[in-house]
Length: 187
Image 1: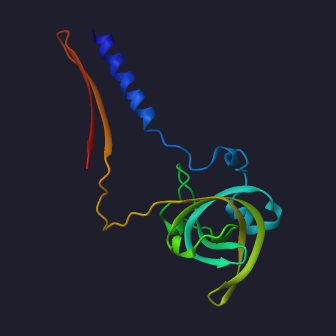
Image 2 (image 1 turned 60 degrees about the horizontal axis):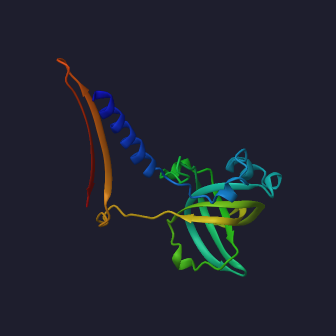
Image 3 (image 1 turned 30 degrees about the horizontal axis):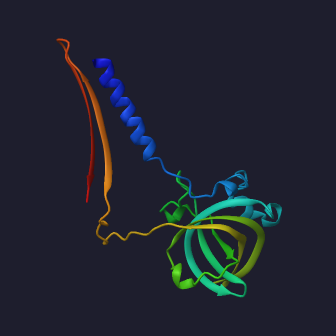
């Protein structure tokens, strides 16, 4: 009986964990095109040497503007976490980049502060004014743009469920053992 209970518990936990596994935010065909050896710092230093390479960069939108033939995003580069989302710490930025979205994207739909992950092709660099100084921005043609949902600190938790999985096994003297699993939702 002990073996059957432990086996059931283990199987249940594995099934539940598999159901909660996250999916990639990068489409599979693009995932295979990304050159993971090309870093933002390398492109910042020598944009022409990486021209034509597909990269995945993330950051925070500083400005979006409509331009002839699409939309230009000025993005503060931020390193990506394990889920391909930009980290929250702005001090980890290595600079800024410009991403060109060929389809029109209304700038009002991608407000300042929006966190993004972009798969794009390096097209070189552009020199533009940043305040009163010239700044060389690495440039990308966007192949895929993922916007991360923003939840303000003062926003109440949405009415959707949250899930938690808890489990444990206990063995005791006198031939007794036990196990359990708890799955709960809350609002």
